[in-house]
Image 1 (tube, rainbow, N blue to C red):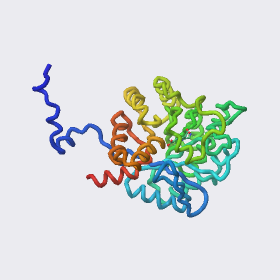
Image 2 (image 1 turned 30 degrees about the vertical axis):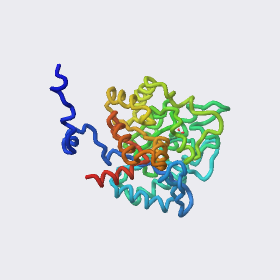
Image 3 (image 1 turned 60 degrees about the vertical axis):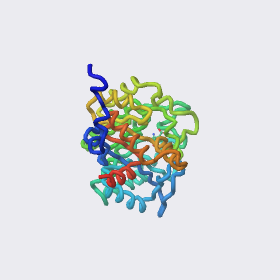
Length: 327
Ligand code: PBG
């Protein structure tokens, strides 16, 4: 076995060119998806307090935003809606004139090539804040699936390119796939939030989307953060149910899940670098405690190194401009 002084690993770190030559993982703008929050009203651009740089946009301002996203070379966006009312079955979520359905039409009309991914869930739309139909204090899994199908179909009808169910109900991918096929949308892919862990890192998003459960928590549907084998079973079942892309979420605390999924499955893997992961860097950078750009690039490169093909991140626009500067 060769060892020091015959082996000197620093030889390959001597110059910038050598380091670039042996760099194993690259972050590129074509891997990124940018989440956007849309809201009813006009001329609105309301800052989301815990997520500096992120806004609630009304449809007129949305156009400006998606134009910028496209100009930066970011291939797609993930849409979240702030509804005008909430009720027990989250009915705006499948309303043809709901905020998401309107937003999809506006975007596809203007920038048809931008990939529009839509989150299929009920939590922003229900008065109780849960991701499914409640029966007393219990989530009714199978009744929820009917609503998810209606949401998915309404998104596909409006022109969504990819449907992304995030509610963690059993059977959601199967039921949505079947509805899409039956309603003549067999070509619309499903990006399944497969391994979605019950995470405190969603905190800033829940403030942004006003989607905190009024009572209880999401532990009966999202995965315990201590479980990686369970996460792999969720991915496995989603693949069997017809998912085209599988997602692991959040990203940084779950790099082991990403790496194991990469070894085991050949489907494209998306990782969601969630709101709390974004806010942590923002807050530390605001105090000059961390170099924002380096911390963001290191985090996202680490997620790619673990094996993610696609990264959903609130940093997508910043990264796109940083990468454009560098090369
Ligand atoms: C809805 C949903 C959540 C996120 C995406 N879709 C929140 C939740 O489960 O409470 C979180 C995204 C983020 O934190 O950036 N089910």
